[in-house]
Length: 113
Image (cartoon, rainbow, N blue to C red; front, side, top):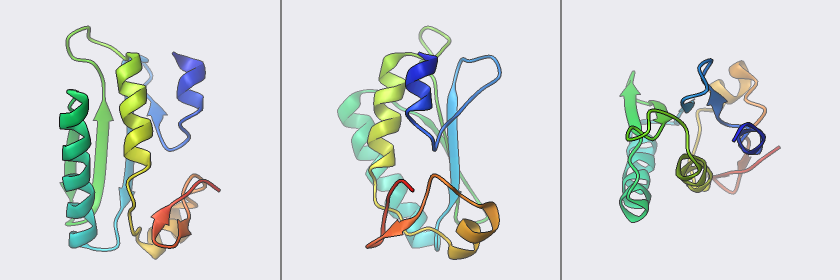
């Protein structure tokens, strides 16, 4: 699955290669919650549920693995791609400071650089 993970530049493969993760800072609480709500709908449709967290009211983290097999599977990668398509208004400071090369704003939606 490693070559497929490279097609998801917003995601990081864990050292043990059992999960992928991503994180970002949303513009505000409402944007973070909109993302989580959209994620929830997609996860239910896919029948595949990531581990998610929200800290500091707008820092979003998502971790994907297939718990049943104890590792990364194709459904994790499919879900990651679908989550990348969720429109998010990112913190401009985070974009600037983190050099978030995989992210940029286009009409309020994420897009690849």
